[in-house]
Image 1 (cartoon, rainbow, N blue to C red):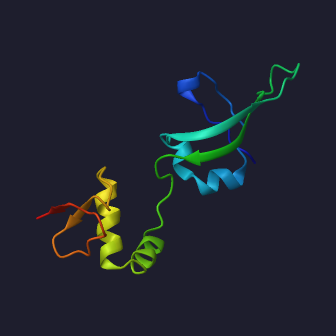
Image 2 (cartoon, rainbow, N blue to C red; image 1 turned 30 degrees about the horizontal axis):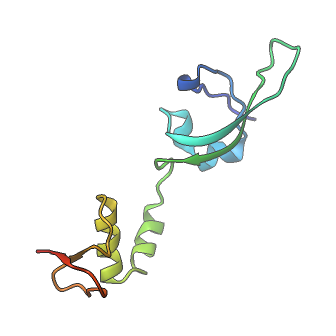
Amino acid sequence: MSTRPEFANLGIKGVLVDPPTTKAHPKLLVGGVWCICDIEYLHTEDARVSPWILGSIKPIQLSKFDFEGYLAARLEFTKDEWVDLLVQSIGFQPPAVRVAGQAHPAGATHSVR
């Protein structure tokens, strides 16, 4: 059975969403999630049938969080890679900003203390 959410910002209701998509993105139906999606329109003469179909979805914010997967992936990072990720997450480019004691690439002129 498929679900039929509303895309309030587009002013359309009854968008057909298949069960695998609903399972992969549970927050899609309980409060929304910002996403990039393709919504297809299939013309029909039957007024009872919604012409809107969710063709694809790419969430911009997390629609599901796998904490165990996060922990496992985090262990794969070196300390410097992890610091680079954190620095990038606040809007800086890691090669341009280095923490004191972190390896400095050739040409880096700034460090954070």
